[in-house]
Length: 199
Length: 199
Ligand SMILES: [Zn+2]
Ligand SMILES: [Zn+2]
Image 1 (tube, rainbow over the protein chains, first blue to last red):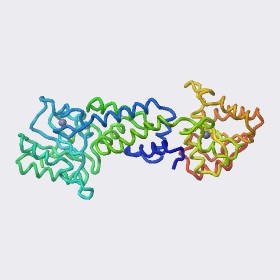
Image 2 (tube, rainbow over the protein chains, first blue to last red):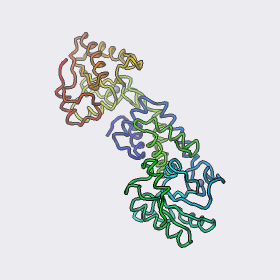
Image 3 (cartoon, chains in turn green, red):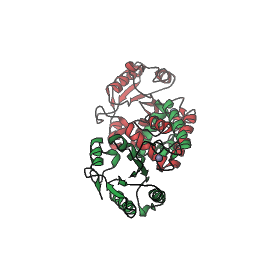
Image 4 (cartoon, chains in turn orange, brown):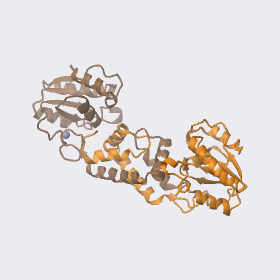
């Protein structure tokens, strides 16, 4: 597309790893960074490089974390016997912002998708099973997205919990079908969360 | 907003230097990069860092370039006596893609904007005057954006050319008012370009 030299073309191409960025906006971003905001670009290099080196996953709940255990898993004041299962780290933030929930989380980092080769192992299910077996969990809240894949994943995990005699709930209706959790407004999400239904 | 640790928060904040990226998409990009595409993120670090080190401006037309003179300025086969003035490097690419133009370019990297302290010097006008004085230029094509600032800038440069007895033209009507050149479809732009009007 562009013909401005290899470094510029490579930058345009590399920017396309960002979600929602097509060739046109990648080009626009490249010109903006090199033409108008080199300080910002330099800061982005540092921040991204630093994050890549330092951000891992919490050993317990699998959320992105700079420490072995994330701040929530390290917080003894949170309820230990209730566990909320989400697909993405952003879902944790959305629930924390919208609700009074003070229990534990488990981040799948995706949903079951056999066609893409994403099975239980990739979602950390063995670690989740260990958690359910080694701790006293009263309730598992299934807060995966209300998509076909999210429902299938919830069903799968629900069965794991039920066979261990753990109460299983799912976020209440009110979340639009096919919607993604992180884009739902806080009040809808809060309503759906507190009105969660036993499965 | 987020509470995931300083490295993650800093990355979210740094991504906002990208045009059109608000807090929500910066967070989304951060999770995507760290959770799903670390190879892409690493490539972006390399590409951006390399471009910052290597991409300067062409000494003649001021477009972004890795070499002292850009490929167009180095190309003897292009017409030397016709000069097209644009605001942004992306406008050069848009015109090259849409038209048969084979002349020279001069990139202002913006438009006159006294309130923001952007005067003739910031736009390289002294260099442009030198160009007009030291070379035989038959025509100056004013291809700034059809915005108030773009029109004012075109008027200013048009006067500089006219006092030197150089023919001055402006892209033809057909470009929607208030629009930005790089977002106009190729055929409209091509039409406007070949139908440019003498001023
Ligand atoms: Zn954790
Ligand atoms: Zn040049």
